[in-house]
Length: 195
Image (cartoon, rainbow, N blue to C red):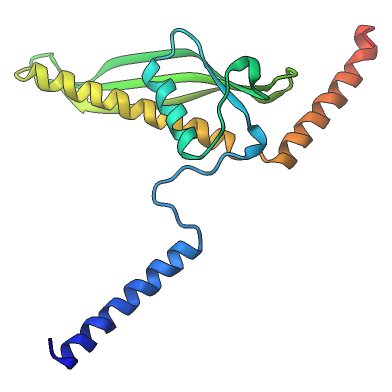
């Protein structure tokens, strides 16, 4: 390789190296969820029986990738509960022969986070996701595979929405929630006659 072509190759690599260094230095993460505060550790993930195992597994995996320490419910300081899962599949487009041409899948689940001493950190919130796909009556097997793939992607998206709901729970935010809860309990005590 001549000295001139080596110099030209090096000058092409310098801008790429500068961009890579800047992106790494600013904490850039490609399609990553926000970090979950260590203040929520140890955290338990408690899925009710109707919540699909694929959703619970995806959530645990995403928390694990974020280095969140998970524990059983009995040993956790905070409990993340998923419940009231609903799955819906409806025809969203019809052919001229009155057959379904497209379906829309909808998944939703309720989320809540409470502390071990029963202080609600995230009130019960419903999370939703949906996806549409074209229906091919001539290729039923491929349609079933596509629908299963979409269901897994939707479970992954719901898990990521859960992570986004946990991200604001910093130590300062948790302390503010605890203080507000305690103030409310003290204000309600005289009205109910409880100490």
